[in-house]
Amino acid sequence: MTIQEKQQDIIDEFAIYDDWMDKYEYIIELGKSVPTLAPELKTKDRLIEGCQSNVWLATEIKDGKMQFSADSDAIITKGIIGLLIQVYNNESPAAILQSELFFINQIGLAEHLSPTRANGLLSMVKRMKTEALQSLAQ
Amino acid sequence: MAPVPFSVAAIRELFPALRQKVYGKQLIYFDNGATSQKPQLVLDTLQQYYALENANIHRGVHYLSQQATTAYEAARRTIQHYIGAKAPEEIIFTKGTTDSINLVAFSFGERLKPGDEILISAMEHHSNIVPWQLLCERKGCTLRVIPISKKGELDLNAFEELLSERTKLLAITHISNTLGTINPVKELIAKAHKVGAKVLLDGAQSIQHLTIDVQDLNCDFYTFSGHKVFGPTGIGVLYGKEAILDSMPPYQGGGDMIAKVTFERSTYNTLPLKFEAGTPHIAGAIGLGSAISFLQSIDMQAAAAHELELTKYAQGILDTFEGLHIIGEAKHKTSVVSFTIDDMHPFDIGTLLDKQGIAVRTGHHCTQPLMDFYQIPGTVRASFAFYNTKEEIDTFVAALERSMQILGA
View 1 (cartoon, rainbow over the protein chains, first blue to last red):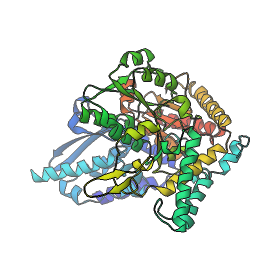
View 2 (cartoon, rainbow over the protein chains, first blue to last red):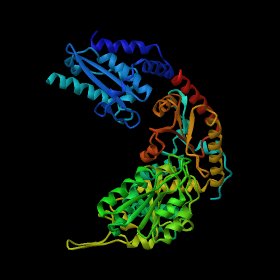
View 3 (cartoon, rainbow over the protein chains, first blue to last red):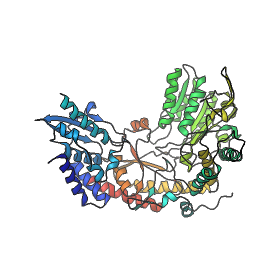
View 4 (cartoon, each protein chain N blue to C red):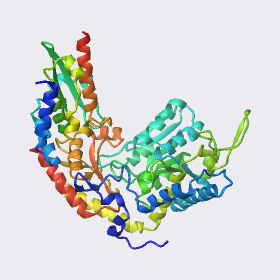
């Protein structure tokens, strides 16, 4: 599946919820299912500080594909991280750099990627792309 | 205008913002510590000013300029009388509390010398920490911090030990924005004066809840923001005793603050204009005057009693929640209920409450040192105004229960 298709999948999945709380219940369940990052991986250089919640992002490359794992102290933030990982994992750095992230807006979560830095998610997306760029440069 | 009997229902009618729905739910606004909603009277004043009275002040000979100047200066006098200042010269219009504190830090701060001390408390907002840190860096002064107890009350013994002839200024919040603690400021002021220190009160959270009499308090400076007291954003007040303000150098240079300008030297205007460089926020000042007039039309004692009742009611219910901890349990506190819940992040709670139409504040509330003291990342804070109701608290409690259920399941 392409990044485009994976995003469309998520949009379709969210289309069944017309109530905000149901939508968030789903995100929270997802957040709970995302594996926690091992404490030794929660280092300062992997930390993205938000004003309210923090995010840790660990990156690996396997066979030319990016592998992200991430964690947050807030469960809603972690749920959205889960969605971002779904979209970007197992993709090549080039594909990630060329992609446009549209599903967040479409499922009505734009506020979580707003530049208020409340939850560190916008910085996390930027860092995912930076890491993709760096791996291309290597 | 004599106060009319206090009626929440009647007061709510005056606030258009309270009538709206968010996410299809009736809005419940419990973020009054951050900013208050605006009564129609203030909105009308702003509209009227820009529609019909707009002109620059203190310089035009024409009709509109005189009208605007009169309205601007009338607002100053309304505020002067409301806080019990001796003269209108003691009321300086600023951008807000932060601006007022920075003005004092830069201008009054000029007289400080290496070794001098500034005393603040552990419950200060960043606005009453950082300007003093900057001043200490400039002047080689030392910042001292009065510790607090777990309940959120000042350690008064430590305060007395910290006071010395080196203390040049006590800069302290009247009411904590995070904990709601009402500090015993009259006592603090008297003791600080005994060692020759001046006292600045951060009134950002007190002007809207308490009756303020700066002469009775005997503070040297009192600061507040218009937007937290039902007025516009971008306008605030610095009250200072006339003799002290007179002895302070100008803060910013520009129009309005000068008497005569030549390239060799300029002389400065008298108070209060000495501290109001450039075209001020005229509409804001007039709007703030209107907000204060609005408060004068309300029985503020009854309003304060209502707010206290709301606080007790909310705390009483929240106290029964397992795993919920109220942060800030001072004996004297205002209508702020800050709390944490075991294993639940304030951001998650705040997000779920928002989707149920309830506006609360979550996070560190610009008091990071205080969060470090409690060793928490932040709190959920519900802060009430006199237009809030017990029914709203019931809805909030139900929404909180639902949020906790979703997060905990």
